Image (cartoon, rainbow, N blue to C red):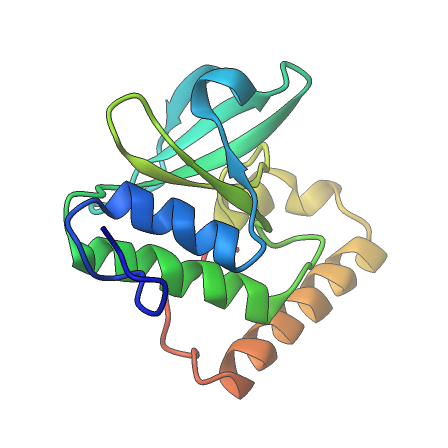
Length: 161
């Protein structure tokens, strides 16, 4: 079992993630209770999977998977949660909502959902339909997120926008 001072110890990583969320005021959602109609999305990542899921059967969320079978992955999940918290809430960035664990013990980050799946896909499909005001807002929010990542020492980090 993980000690209260170090959530990375022990072999039960799902418990460590749940404990981390409780200790740090993050939301831990029951997978069976909160999510339905789960579909895998093509995200272009070899290491992680992304899913679209309905939350409360009302609105869509993105679930980002991590294989939770070792301490390194547990650290990576916690690092990504901290990164999302540093960047903060921005309208056009996948915002962190909480964490859940699938029936197969996959740790999943719960994030906002965008229909285009990635910023690149979204812009490729909709750029010509957008007005300049929206295009400028996208540019400002992306540059603010990059500045925030740079100020927090995370510029080289892969981050879904």
